[in-house]
View 1 (cartoon, rainbow, N blue to C red):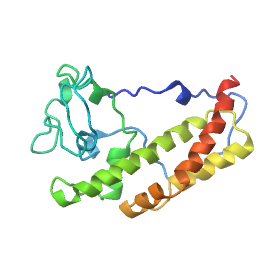
View 2: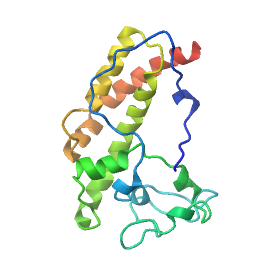
View 3: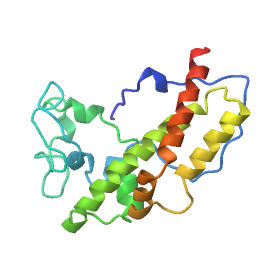
Amino acid sequence: MKRRIVPAFFVFYAHPFQAHKESIVKPVSLAPDCSRCAALCCITLAFDKSDHFALDKPAGVPCPNLNDQHLCEIHDRLEHEGFSGCVRYNCSGAGQRVTQEVFGGTSWHTDPSLLASYLDAFRIMRKLHDLLVVLEGAKHLPLSPEDQDVRNTLLNQLSPTESWTLESLISFDQGDLQSKANVFFKTLKRYITAR
């Protein structure tokens, strides 16, 4: 099982006295499921030879440990082979969401012309899922009704009932929703420091 190292800012604790109304959003898994992904982190991400990676790999280039079926040849022994960074990495479910939702389960493996679109979609979906992770954690804070409404609005905007497409992801990336979310995230600090 992959572990995620979470900065202290994102560790939230449930407040026992306040029940928040929940937003009605399309359920989204924020847990990675490599079996439903097209090895996107193994291609998209760059890494430098270090204690966490046994070699240098530029962004957008398949990891040399991927086999002909685009599966990791050393997945069961990543740490032993010098790839502890792979074990610790967590896409928060962005990889399988791109593969299954945006591209309907089709794969760049069978159609290499899709690779650039896959990589763009994964880059943007990772940003979107990072926002969802913080919003999910914020439900455990004793938010004011106004802040809870902002949280719910952001969740609804980031989790539309219709599936994400490459075009809608690009529109999200070029829009102002990320900056609106970041402004809201700054307000969460007061709930954390008040504890």
